[in-house]
Length: 164
Image (tube, rainbow, N blue to C red; front, side, top):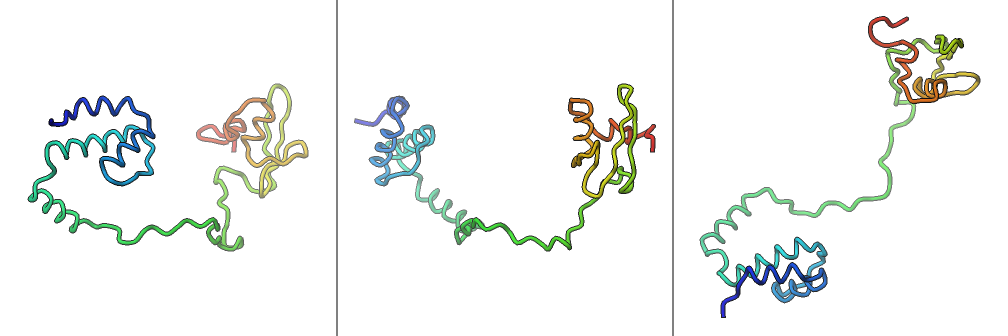
């Protein structure tokens, strides 16, 4: 009695992942580490169809082998990942880039916000406001306003009309 592939696929969709893995082992004669239900169903259905209707013709198999021989295939497995971090260059060789919009170190940025004079000193590694060091102008502006805002915009240092 010929196998009805459509009925078999419908039956496969009702099976759980473990049952599909067992069916895979029956059909292919080997186990699989896969747990993906959709992948298992497609692979089993393909194999059942190949068994029921015949596999590729000899000519098609030869052509597939020719194509595989011409392909640039990796001949060795990828190297295992190591948990060691890559070797960094010495700190002296790395020079941090400074934003061109910033005034020189030691300058004081000043503006009036809600009737209060705000003054921020530019440091080599941040910005000082009220005795506290912040890493960015945006962090200073957020502390002052209580909401996130762009530090360059808050201190009016961008584009046309900047007060520099």
